Image (cartoon, rainbow, N blue to C red):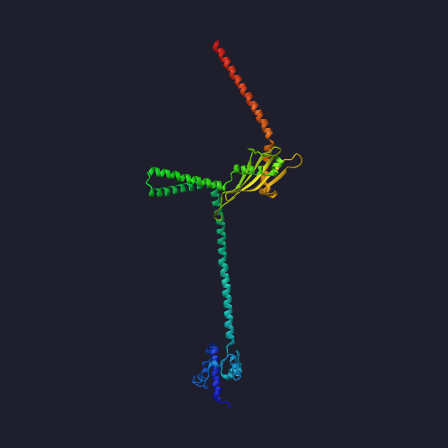
Length: 377
């Protein structure tokens, strides 16, 4: 049989558990409910040794199923709450608090995105302006270098010469006793020679010599069997040459100095025992070495178009640069065709010069005869 004291003990235990689960609501409830005369003030302390909170496990047993359902239910029946003496949960206040929290977090998100947009626009404008000014400054530096590169190279050479002179003079005066005048001028001459030879070496490494390209080409075509079969051996060159240089030099890209590769397009006529021809060459200076990209020989035929023989490269390489070699080919061909005309003009000029010299000699002879006749009379 259930006693009233047992019911009061269970009611106090449920009140203590509800206080731990929802302390805010209990704190906001009427304090008179906690001090109900139905339960003595020392009832809870008397029950604590007998009832442990660890006995209310998450897995209910058969003896405490009803109590577990009451304690684990998130929403108790209002009548049961009133019977147990528990305060009612202010649902509207909790919902309003969650709504305010949601709205405030959304406002923080909108505020953060708006601030980010406000900051991004000036940053993008400043970066684009800086990029434009940087490109303009790079173009000015490149133009200054192209205009004053020789002056800069000369100043650098003088500085290096003085630097080497002072270093060598200091080292020599430390270990060897030399006269001041001989040491100064001797080491000055030595440092000047070192700078001069270094400059010549760099010039030969990064520039193309057309005469050297011509000699390389003559060696190649004189050892090519397909060329010798058509034109006849041996092949001889000519002083008539046309060449164009492109590239080379130092350029500044994004404030970084870079050395451009240099190219040379060379055309010259050749003469064999049977045929004449026109040689087209394209050479690139790569890491100090000559890299021949194109070597072709145009041989005029008696019937039909000219025959073009490729030793290096192909027709696509021949049309590189917008047909630059074909543009150079026209004046060379015209100069070759005008050779006979030039020879006739030279012959006519020589005859005119000889006749003019003869007339001048006859005039001088007559003047001498007239002078002798005047003296004899």
